[in-house]
Every structure is written in C-alpha cells, then in structure tokens.
Image (tube, rainbow, N blue to C red; front, side, top):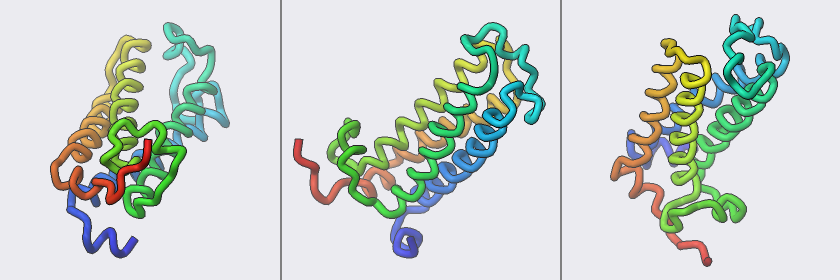
Length: 160
C-alpha cells in the first residue's frame, strides 16, 4: 500500500478514500437496519417504506451492508493493490482496465440508482440523499479522470 501512496495520482488516492468512507458508513447503516428491522435504531420510521416493495428494513439493510459496505471496502483495497481476480474480470466490460477501476464505475452508478429509488419510494428528498448522490457522482468523476484511467490500464489484457 505504501507504493500506492507514493506512485498513484492524487485523484486515485481520493477515490480510495471516498470508497472507504462509503463502505464504513454503509456497514454501520446496514448492520443497524439488519439488527433492528423497524428502523428505530437509526430513527427511520417504518412509514418511509409504505410505497416501497419492503415491509421492513431487512432487505434494504442487507443491500446497504453488502453492495455499499463490503464491496466498496474491497474495492478500496483492490484499487490500491491492483490484484488479479478472474471472477471479477468476468464482469469487467473494460478489459483494458483493471477490474477494480470498472467496479468503481459500477458502484458509482449503483449508488446513484439506489438514492434515486429511495427518493422515488419515499416521495421526498432529504439532505442525506443529496450527500450520497454527490458521493456517487464524485466516484464517477474521480474514476473517469484521465490520470486515474491511465493508472488502472492493465499491463496485460486478460484473455477472453
């Protein structure tokens, strides 16, 4: 990891930090919703779910914990280490880029979609939605910066 902090562009470092912050917050929020599916632990009334497909916060908690908690934390490490992972490469639509770069884009899109669905289902916008929409956009912007793209070009393109 020391090599990453010495040799990577500042935008790559920021991208890793954003993924770490997203991951830590989502692990906390996801666990809280799984532990207390009524939402009371996070002061989220169950009435927010009345127009959603969910009766309680269990499924949203699992999605939050796994997709926006665990995955960004794994990505933060992968963005620093650039380890090869054949299973992840199977869903990498940009074969010339390291899989972690592509998955960073995926998480940015997924977060924007997740927040959009929340706003749609509760029919209201709260400050937290604006913050996490900005986080999703920041992930997209940082990932797409030319210096970041160049840093994650594969040295060897995986075989098809």
